[in-house]
Image 1 (tube, rainbow, N blue to C red):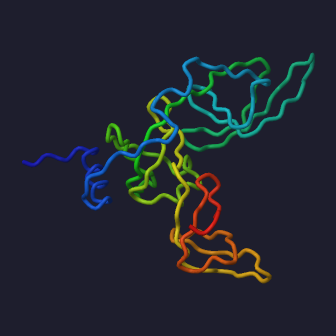
Image 2 (cartoon, rainbow, N blue to C red):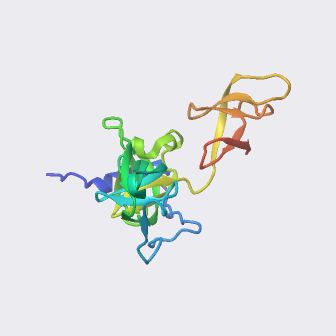
Length: 226
């Protein structure tokens, strides 16, 4: 009786099919290495060590600080209201932090992966680790706007904490074809164009249908004609 194919093997075959059945070489990170971002464990102290974007371990989970305000209470004790994002689920909540509290800073590794597919049943996104060929999943809320720009077979960089992906980024700017111009403005100003992934963006007036444009890998705005 034939045995069920291991999950990782199935994803590997999917990736090979995406690449046309040809041999492939794992992409290399430019400037990023598969190593810890810091050897010494850093500590974030409230409120002096808080800055937007810092990642801290709270309740055994990684959280990213998105904003905060501190207010002194009686006897000079400061209470900090912090807006934080759970790096596992993408959930954004407000937490109250006491002055003098210390949190371990999240220390991560960067790995190389390839986006293989989106599971339409549960909405998760699947990425193959190009070193171990392990199939890994991410929730849509973790990816945010990046989910709209993923294409099957695309190389990505994975930020990993405790063997779990907490964020993902593109190694390079994204090349997209313009499929439609939804709105043109007078006097040579910008226009609204639709790209091949269905996303509408503002673009220079000289951009035409059929042009390929370069999209910024961080803010996903059109930079110029490719």
